[in-house]
Length: 132
Image 1: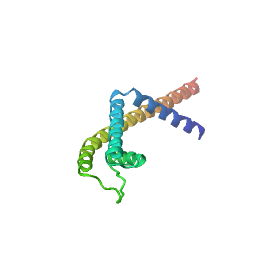
Image 2 (image 1 turned 45 degrees about the horizontal axis):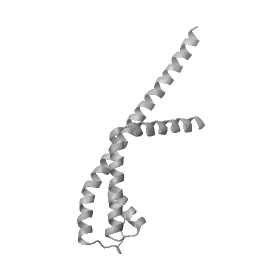
Image 3 (image 1 turned 120 degrees about the vertical axis):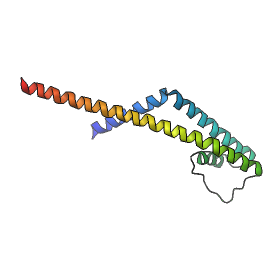
Image 4 (image 1 turned 120 degrees about the horizontal axis):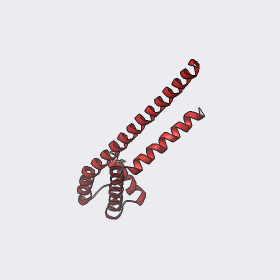
C-alpha cells in the first residue's frame, strides 16, 4: 500500500513537471487565466455582480457549467459580451483540457513502460541467479 502511494505520488510529480515544462500548456493556462480575469472584471464592474459571484460566472461559463441564478439579469451589452466570451473561452478551455489529457496519458504510458522494464529486469536477474 505504501509503495503504491509513493508510486502514485511520483507519477503525479512527473505529470506536474511535464505540464510545467510544456510551452503550449503554459500559454493556454495563461490565456485561460486572462479570460477568467477579463470575465470576472466585466461581470463585477459592468454587470455589478458581487466579486465572488462574478468569478463563479466566469469560471462556470468557461467550463460549460454555468451557475444558474434566476435573480441575475444581464444588460444588452452583458448578453453580447457573454456570447463572445463563451465562443472564445470555451474553445480555449477545451484545448487546455485536451492538452492536459494528452500529457497525462503520455506520462502514464511512460510510467507503465518503466514499470514493465523494471519487472522484466528483476525477472531476468532472478532467472540468471537460478541458472548459476
